[in-house]
Image (cartoon, rainbow, N blue to C red):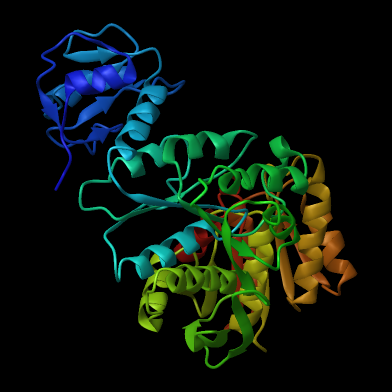
Length: 445
């Protein structure tokens, strides 16, 4: 059953000034008038490019009983000092109104994939709400929590960290009962400065657990393992040793792998990189703790639903579209996946820069280049400021055909002339590099 509150209740919770009938009820929130439904209140977020206050009249016309603002407006409203803080405080209060359990997860790689698989397995037994897509920031987290209602048993909440304090702030809204860090690695180093600092930030998700809380430990990540030792809560260890153990892994077809997991046995999972195998192990650990049968079909469907990596056949080329985003761990994972898919076929990598790596950017781009060579990629196309570093690492591990470009169209043209039919091509880079444009140009040829 959907929740309902009065505007007066909301105003009291967020400490706002209400200028309309406080007895009116609402049953949802919106931050986008293009997606608002009647009965939802609208939060007007100020912005450099778009100011939500410009849309308050539209929100009322579409059925909002009131809007939440920081400026004086002529429509029914609740005025607060900070609309984001009001949303967060309301979500925190709402979360504590229900006897729901929250599972929170973060990590340098694999957050969204793990979230989807865990959610799918829990739904076999419980009513679950889950973060949409990668709704993992200071806005997405409270919006996800506000989907909790009286029928909800679990909320699975993804949390991202780009700077110190992010995880603690999100945990102070969500109050997790169980949590995990998928993996700690080099990501967001521009503001976190070192992998050790990344670990400190990520592990806040474990340190805030209540005495009855539970933490799932990736036993093969030294940063997580070291910090987990001092946690005063119960723990489940998964990896190549622990409570849920990967005994063996082998490719059984072009699309599938077989993993032998103790104490579950053999399971068929989609063909994926070793990093994604840990996402499956984590989900299995959660299932076992909560007495849920591990269903291969559920695993397969959940993994495919994430849809981060897409296989496209374009002009007799097999394109692995992993252009969504990138950091060193996800780059290594994608290059490994290229190697698995291509087998003995011609392999090509089209790589853009990884952003937000700070002073360690050159180092990690060099390491990505080395990985390209280790996985026997035949040809490397590069785009971005750190192309020289990637090229240097690739040459060191045996890649001879390396090309650098200043625009996406030139890359597409070079692929057409340099890459043989039937080749496999990985396309990946940070969001800001817009590597999907290479695919657009390939399709338009």
